[in-house]
Structure formats: structure tokens, C-alpha cells
Length: 367
Image (cartoon, rainbow, N blue to C red; front, top):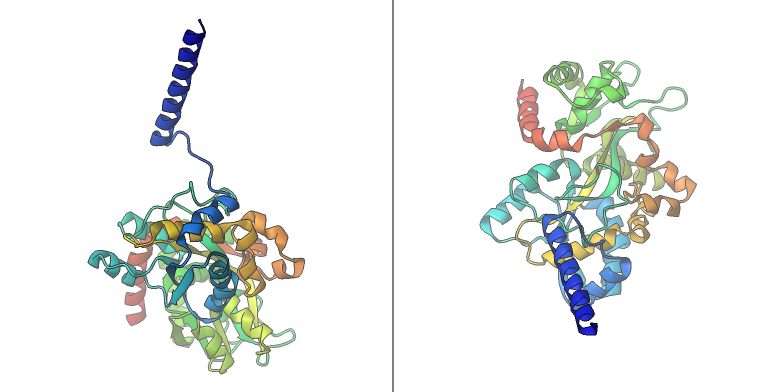
């Protein structure tokens, strides 16, 4: 009887194990993501190795170095090799040539899904990376957001002051009230939604973009086009243009411009009418250090790590459990605290329409 009971117990355990294994294979059940302790233990075997991370340079990459790269290297003995700027076309070329030299890349979240679907990115392992507390819509199987940021309007406070200051991003169209040289990004990602706002559309009506909306936006952009003196292409340009007083107002990335203000440059930012977007960690397909890259992303996404960068530059964390670690003053400068004033970027729409929209943008600029 005892032997039969033991056999039955063993058989039950075998069946339970087989059931669990089947569920894991089919995706019906999955292991919980690694804890902080699990990530630390998994990283131990990589001590002495290196990881190449590519980002965007400037004050943003300086903040990443202090918030992520240096603490990670110190804690785990893994050297971080930095490169910049991040470039999707270079990722594509590396993957095609089967010579991928970047391990982790900081990319615009709105480009990631399309890049992944075309076979240029590794799928992320959410048994390693914990995505459960990330902002809704700020991750997919191809990417995990690292920051939430806004593209908005910056202006010189020694040119516009008192009651005569821009109060909405669409004020860049108001050349009579706010005269002077101005700059827009050479890209449709913010200009199309901003033009719709300038034409009277409400924030919640912007997305999804339709052909009628797109044509309406280009018509509105026709009005401002003759007044744009500089079309910027790199994130470091608007801060430099404003610092040198080459322009009196420019659209730009909130953290880049607010850093100038903290450094004493007479500039300020305008949040109403901005677009809330994100940057994400991605891993190029064929990256030589795939597992180490996953572990770095997992570590950087932990709530105890995801908030540090926000104390150095005004880009918000994306792990909701990180918010409570920020002071009220710091949080007030974060794009995540301005959601009700902002267009919420539709990452999926841009991921599948970005290339076509860039072509249309180029054709419009040449007209």
C-alpha cells in the first residue's frame, strides 16, 4: 500500500510538472520576472566584461552616465562603453551585415515596433525584465521605455517677459505677438499634431491621425513655413540656438531646454500643447551580449533605479513605483505631471506610418 501511495504521489508530481512545462511552452503560464536580487545574482558571472550602450549625447547622455552607467559598472564590475548618436539606419546596416557592435540602444519609442517587426530587434524576455509597473503603452515585445519626455516650446525670457510670453506651444505661429527668429524640428512627429492644435483641434481629437487630419496639418504648416529660420535635426541644436540667441523660440526636448534654465540661461519652457513621448531600450538583432543586455535593461527598469535620472534632468521615470521617490518640486517639472495639457503620442500609429510620413514631410519642405 505504501509503495502504491509513493508511486501515485510520484506520478502526480510528474503530471503536474508536465502540465506546468506545457503551459510555459504555450505561453498560458509564465514565470515571474526576476527580482532585484535575481538580477544581481545573474549579473555576477559577467564581472570583468563590457557592454556597449548607444544614446543621444548631450545633457541627456551625461545624466544617463551618472544615473545608470557608472552605478552599474561600480556595482557589477562591468565596463560600459558609450557611443552616440543612436541611429536606426545604422542598426539596420549592422544587422544586415551581421556585424552588430551595439548591445543596447536608446531609441525613440515611436520607432521601435516597426523596427522589430521588420526583423532588426531582439524580442525582450519579460521573465527577466519586469514590465508590470511600467506606464501603459510604454513597452512592447521589442522595447521597454526608459524615460517619458515632451517635445515642447522653449523661448528666451529676455526677449519675451511679463504678460507678453508664450503660453501655448502653438504660439510659435503667432509671429505678430512674438516676432523673431524661430526653429522647428525637421520631422513630422511633433509638427503634424502641433499644427492640428494650432488649427483649433482639441488634444483628445489628434489621434489616430487620418488622411484628412494630415492634409489639414500640412495646410496649417504652410502658414508658418516662411517664418522658420532653422530646421533642427539633433536634440542638442535647440538649446544651442537659444543659448546663442540665434533664435528667440524653438521647439525642443523639455529636459534639454530646462537644463539651460537651471544653468542660468534666460530661457523657459511651455508645456501646454506639448507631446508626451518616450525613449526606449532596444537590443539590435544579433547583439553579441543579448543576455547581459536584457539584465542591464531589467536592472535599469527597477523602481529603485528608474527614478535617479529624473533628479539630474527633467525627464520622468516610466516605472510607476518610482514616482513616490521624487520630491513634489522635481515631479512638478516632469512631463508625466503635465499629461492633461499634452498630446499623448500614439507610438503604434507612428511605428507603422513613420517612414511614409517622413517622405511626405520632405516633399512638403521642397514645395
